[in-house]
Image (cartoon, rainbow, N blue to C red; front, side, top):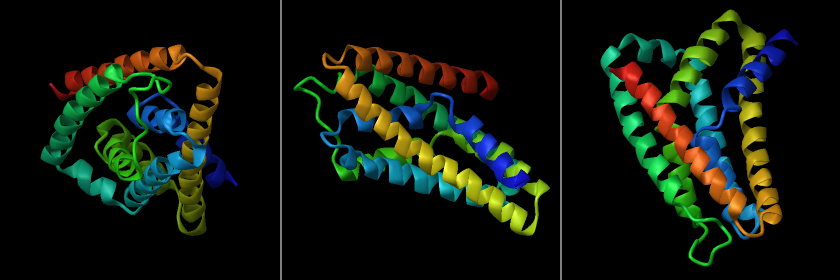
Length: 200
């Protein structure tokens, strides 16, 4: 029970803050004509998080943290990616306008892969926090801890698409979504700046 609660609280604490991955999944729930059409993005993000959590717990995190050049390369690529994603989200138009089109399944998957696997903040959180926390457990306790962390990710991503769908229904004129996009872009740029200062 301790390992399960630890996994749930830890994973929820890491995934809760607004970030590029959460913003993208939420926006798919708000832009797709039907909720079910936003599921490819949620499923892809869930699979990516599952992969990263498994790799972190299986010990790959220790290897990554040993090589400074690998960590620096990941940070540099991630900063550029976050700056670009902030620009894209800032310029995004509300989902209710005729000029805005929902992303097809293929583009959803590609974007979800990029925001999940090219986000250094999320990767370092999973490696540095979940990976090291898992060292506390062995055997079944570690398995339960792993399952708890993965379950939180999947539930969260499906919940985000549903929340995006609800916002779309409440926000007929697209004003709230426009404000959300601007705030999200500023947050993402702020994250990139924070990483850049740490990088320098």
